[in-house]
Image (cartoon, rainbow, N blue to C red; front, side, top):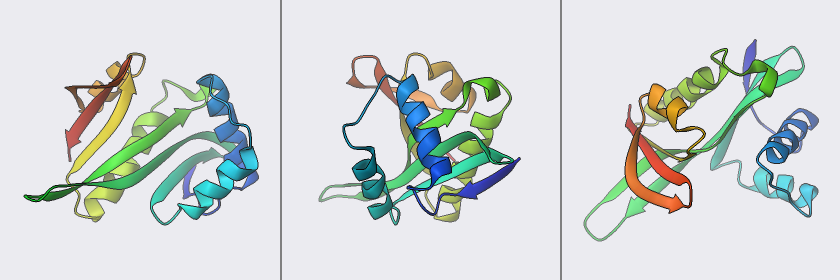
Length: 149
């Protein structure tokens, strides 16, 4: 197994995995090419790491920095945008490994808090990673989870 930062969101390895992920969550797009071009345009702010077994994508994690501001304070958080592990590789520690890599990235950037949206299907996984649920409900079936790292 090896982990690589995604340098090109239009690479065949990434686009194939991302399309599979979108299929699993029943999401589609009208223009894949434009989506991946937009992701490339955001690659200075959005990071992704793929976990590979040879040339097969086992999973990926996408993350970015977010900043909450008001007149009294400004605070940066690490935010997990997407986490996906391909079905045959689930329950083998790959998701936990990818989460740990993202957390290490944010610790190196002096951001001691992480946040993410979780569906009821993924809540147990995130709790096992040390995240706790807030009472904030983003949309039906999704909550915000946080963790101090």
